[in-house]
Length: 391
Image (cartoon, rainbow, N blue to C red; front, side):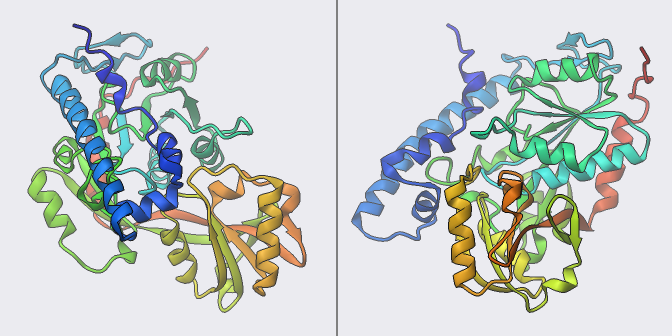
């Protein structure tokens, strides 16, 4: 019997069918699964989603079991671009950055940190990503990675194995970084770093589509390291202890999304100090909008209005007009969004009605455990990096 369909099931973008599920958009779905919607219809919907989640969980558990038992093979990539199912010492080191919940947990900032770390050591790396294509034919995260990490090859390919081969053969990569790779087990990795958002660590404890979990929390047993992001936006809890109970050997660290400046009109920078007490209209189309608003508020900006779009929203001229109109009516002096959203808006909209449209540039900053993560990476790649090739 052919079980190959199981190897692809967790790569399905579950958010696309959710957008059309009983006319629910992302925010309606989130309010439903979080318990924010009350009443009999909401209860019935949660029951239906629970049934679907049970079926999804069974498939994911079977798939993981097949990989754990070797029924599904994982492949490594050799310096010449050849693949092997053997754990060869000479294989190209691969580091995966992923999560166990859907939505923004800080994977992209973590990838940028890792690229900068490796480049500072003279290591030629490439990022493997499947990408999320917008209506304009552009990719969200890959575009940010390419802009934030000059000189690094960003290989966009839903087939991670083919992307890895391209990165080695064409770009001569010495280390591969797999973006959003925790569920993509066909490509062997040396390190699995999982990012967990401290504000919503375990997705309401339910699998998609009844919750935010892409796979069971017990899957953290596969993780080599866990980085708890947005640690400054959650009250003190025993999250690290819970993770250690699941995987006693996992390395743990805490990080925050640290704002560095405001950027508009390409590369014009505004110091963070100028946000203090400034009337700001904030909007975004990301998975965790509240976290973005909290980051803006942490800079002492006065948020006079806000608007939330679905994750990966493709902005139209009508959207932009609406944003500027609402912001002007609210008395804002600046419109602020995320880098991902800003890159999908027509640059000609940078200023109108006396307002400027800008994004808050943030970077991942460790507040605890950075040495443990960097030491793990150094130990893993030492002696495994192939010589740089020319020609």
